[in-house]
Image 1 (tube, rainbow, N blue to C red):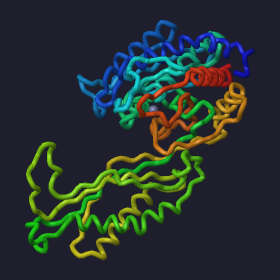
Image 2 (image 1 turned 180 degrees about the vertical axis):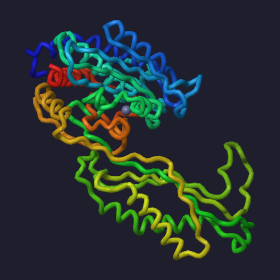
Image 3 (image 1 turned 90 degrees about the vertical axis):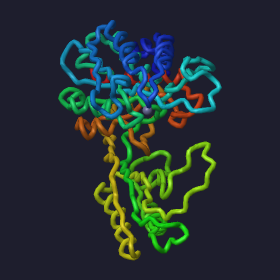
Image 4 (image 1 turned 180 degrees about the horizontal axis):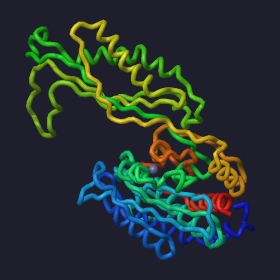
Length: 426
Ligand SMILES: [Zn+2]
């Protein structure tokens, strides 16, 4: 820290042990998604801590959202601390869910092991380290500025890893991110402590199905193979769509740089007879496939219109249809997200940039995420454009075995967050 004289930075430094302990406590509640384990437990733990310090705390179940059930209820926590006078509200939003553990761990994933200046565990970097840093930043800020203006909010929300419908989307639909209530939002996702993430690319997922006619495999001429029809679709994608996507570049500062263009992944392909179950030793049956499906994952740029993205695929399919006798298809749209990018001149961006310079002695890098995160709901449903992702942790470690977050990184980014609060609320 270069700004050791600042009282709020001293308050953050004094809470180093508390920050580590809070991060460990959060990791020790295994909020696995799916299925959505222990959501109430983590909301009660955090809510109890903040309520004890004078915050107004609400626990909100996103009833009826995807995955919500009495066995796996989708709980969210929103806490608000009012200042001494009216003013803006700064909101820190973290998701509390974590992805499956997977293989390859050398430490227990839910113990919160501290080793070599790091806290290890599933969710350490994505994003319980960031959640802990924002809580400590808020506590340090309030201690150093008891007469501040406005309000601070902290939320811990469900299901970011599976689309955020039982979390930020649900809260945004109920007004929690309306511009009249909240003016600045920071999402402490692990983007590295010296980078400001302005937003993300867009997404369109669709299932394409080709149709055929079943027949005996020894007489394929009596049927019509949906798999061969899909082969024609894939050839057309290779021949025309991939070169087209590679030619579309963006001014968005997406990292890694390979994602500074339109991209397409084919998530799955399936046609014909089902894959045999494990342990089945019989031979497959000879049939011409009457259905073949692929799921495409198209990521698009702020310069592109989602209707054009969809039209590209439909016109490709129409071209194959015109060229190929018997070809027919259906497109089922599965999921879409509009790109989001906050302006570099937005107040929350300017304050965070200034705070990074003070704490780290360098100018921040501005980045955009190749994939989406909860900013999409805050932007589209909440209508709030003054939103960034900023938090400790190395993005590449997210969802990996032996995930960790650096203790110095958590302390530094908590210092940045506390200075942002001072800048915006005093
Ligand atoms: Zn995350």
